Amino acid sequence: MVITDNALIVLDGATAHDPAMPSAGEYVDCLASELARSIGDASPLAEILKRSISRTTESLGIVPGLAPSSTVALVRVESDTVDALILGDTSVIVGQRGGDIATYTDDRLSQLDLPEADLYRRFLALGWGYTGRHGKILEELQVAERARRNRPRGYWIAEADPSAAEHAVHVQFARDELSWIVVATDGAFDLMPALGLGWHEVARMSTPQLGELLDRIHTWEAEIDPEGKALPRAKRHDDKTIAIVRFR
Image 1 (cartoon, rainbow, N blue to C red):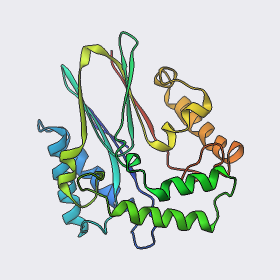
Image 2: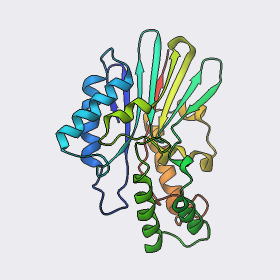
Image 3: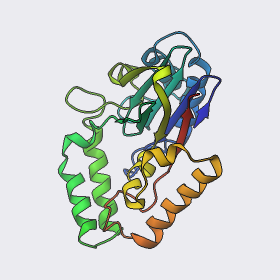
Image 4: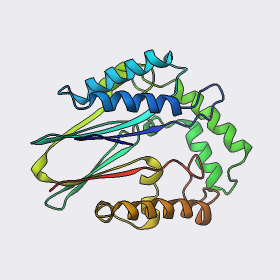
């Protein structure tokens, strides 16, 4: 997560279940730096993301199809408007001054209905846990996903193809209509129903309270559902980020 004078940048690098894929850590750090350097420009967010992916690709010497990847969520606050861009399954939850709440995410990957994704969830729901067989299914799933990455009728993600930015989800709001925005990676977003919390409650939390919330999520994963039976998920513990923008 990166915070600038008028913007919020949240990235969530993909775990490399396939041993042929490199770790996303260096990619995320480089892309975050490029975005932070450019997000204050007057350019549309999609153009800023496109340039940032291009510079990251050049800097790291990576090529499409064999590169690490990351979700992207950008929120930029201007004097009269607020823009949000989403690429991948990080969610942007928007609270209006009138009390309405809307959630925006990019669910194209989950809409592919890949058989490997159904298989690993059924494997966990049956109580078989995070075994070597589970890891092998995830490896096969990642190979199948990579074949559909950044192409029509597939899904789009920040990787080594700058044109993916052109397919990002973009929403814009009048600033005076907003009360708050929460940005949450899937590791936090997916667990919120299990904790019985609403986003209006999360939006009022202080920084220490958010830290406690992330600890609660981690504890739920470790103690209540350590084998992923109640909530089948790729990993027992996923990275978790929650960030809040409040408007006066």
